[in-house]
Amino acid sequence: MKFFKCFLFIFLISAITASCSKQTLLKAQQNNKNYTFVQNSLYNLLQNENHSKETRYAIVNRIANNMLSIKDYNSLILFLTDWVEKHPDDSYNCYWLLMTAFAYLETDAKPMARYYFERIINNYEDLMVLGKSIHFLCLQHLIQISTNPTNRISYFNQLSTRFPGNVKITELYFRTAIEYENLGEWNLALKTYQKFLDQEDANSIQISGYPNAYLTARQLIDFNNSPKDWTFESVDALVSAIKKAISNYNYKALDSYRSKVNFFAMSWRQDETDSNAQESFSMHDFMRGNRIRYNAELDEDSGPTEAYLKTWGWSNYINVWYLYFRKVNFPADSEIHGRWEWAGIYFGEKL
Image 1 (tube, helix red, strand yellow):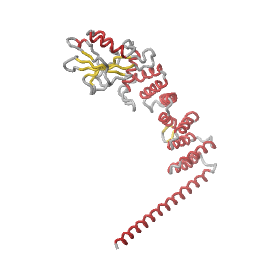
Image 2 (tube, one colour):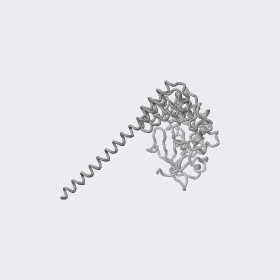
Image 3 (cartoon, rainbow, N blue to C red):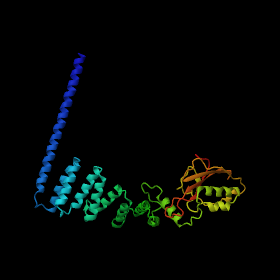
Image 4 (cartoon, helix red, strand yellow):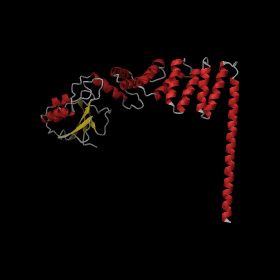
């Protein structure tokens, strides 16, 4: 009896499932028939050459959006590109090509999307659709998908000159400077960083991907404008000079070896961007009356671009100081790039 009830239950479930599946299939078939009927009707309407420009736009737009609704991107691309080719006088071709570019984006065909975005900008007058400039939309998407620095600089410049009211000029200056760096155009990069710093909101603007934009630009500009006469040819030469100055308690020599730009003095927990991280003081204040010592070798965490030297005896409050050295990364000046500088101090034992 239990077996019969179980069998009956399974049979009923199977029947219901089959019925639901059949209903779903029938509904899908009906929807497909409706879709095909609507599209064919619209295609037939479109054959009438006497439609007004507005009516023709409405029909093409409806056909395209119907394709979008079922994510039939291939048919959409074929339909719109064929329409543009056969109707070069259509004043909405700019918009149809924009839809084509978006369809390529949806299929992850970024090179093709980029081709159509650029084709729109270079060959068609701008068009406002729903209050938005098509050229502006194209430039925004080109910036997102392009990896070529030269192209990105062109897009940034077009945005700032053509749509100054729609963009953050300060941010565009910074991002343009980054691209000049990527190209190795250091003179242009530094000039553009200076334009960024000259903006009123430069020290407060938040730029995605660059949490320390202002500090980055400020350090580069200040370093460029400095004499850079504190750098050494190698880390060994720098460390040797500092050890000798400490041994001789020659605070004047130590002061001269410190970087005159962006030198920091902070705890390991602080960040270089903290307001009190960059200090200006004389080593005399900490050497007088104290017995300063240092390790014979650099710290084990030292590497090819940065190094640490443990020293102690500076004060009763914070006895241990790690002197921090780094290789100068400044391709704008080949004579300075790759040399070494004493860039900062970390207070206390390493965390």
